[in-house]
Image (cartoon, rainbow, N blue to C red; front, side, top):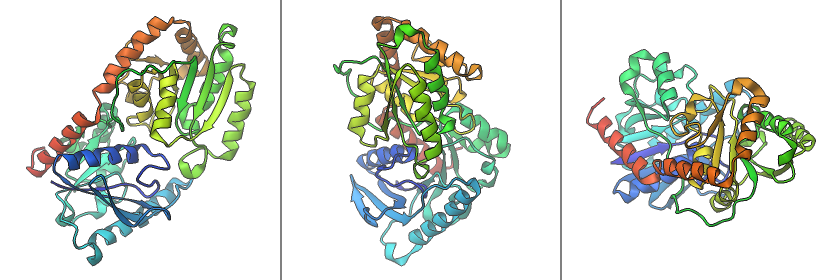
Amino acid sequence: MKITIVLGAFFPVPPTMGGGVEKVWFSLAPEFVKRGHDVVMVSRKLPELRREETINGVKHLRVDGFDPPRSLVWLKFLDLIYSLRTMSILRSRRMSELPDADIIVTNTFWLPILLRNSRHGRVYVHVARYPKGQMRFYGNAARLQALSRVIANAIIAQAPRLRAKVRILPNPLPFRTSTASNTPRNNTILFVGRVHPEKGIELLLRAFVCLPREFLSTWKANIVGSHEIHLGGGGKVFFQAMQQLGKQSPLQVQWLGPIFDEAELRAQYRSSMIFAYPSLAETGEAFPLAPLEAMAEGCVPLVSNLACFNDYIEDGVTGFVFDRFGGYPALGNRLADLLRLDRNALAKIAHAARAKAAEFAIEPVAQRYLEDFASVLVGRE
């Protein structure tokens, strides 16, 4: 197959500024190439990146993009400009050596509406966030690919006539799974994600205050993530408020900033005992990668009871879940329950979490995507 993958206007590939979608497709594309397919990837241009290059057999084209704005309306306008630029690149004579595509994958807002030329391939919409009603405009798309059951149900609820086009395919782990690490695990509670209100970081910091004194001298917390608006964070004022809240916590809180290097990030997962991800983004999360990455490295996840986690975290089996409607006291109580468990009990959960994460390894998930691409091309719905 000839596959074109068009990513969004706001994060580059390779994913040097983060971005879950960018990490996923940067991992999937070379796997498609290994299986004999031609892949072109379009992403945001940065000054230090070439306009065109080939990485691991994938031809990369880069289009001038933007830093993400605060305004959702302005974000959609910038996405439109980027989409039009992408259309121009794909049509240009300078790129005429590019093969006509069979499939064109995109997570952008406008391209599924703008793409009508069969030369670009059948449109495969990667629904990477909870849909906001735009699905009803995607009638020309061949596939609406949901990352989880909750996202599939939301697509169908918003666009019932497109039910037959909806399929559930998860995100893969963006790295190869490894055998259990011998790295000693510290009594560390780790958070990896954008330092943004919707990620529940304030909830987590307030929950630390509720922890019994018995844990304060033996446990610490590491916060990994960006607060800058152009990286999807909540901004400087919010970050400073969270730092002050962290100082009020009797638990030692370290702010490590964003970590984009894969090896360094995996080292954080391997050395931590518990991974806390108290997301409150009911209409934002689709299939969060960070808990799955933590599970793959044997870190026990604690997440909120958002439905998006149901596909891979079972309370008390592959991780732990708290009731987000109970606020920070509920999170604090659940966290205290985990900290009271002995090492053997936590190791048992970690083993089950690692086994569950292995189901999302890059190889089997890539095969599922290719099979779905093929089904679209032969007209099977």
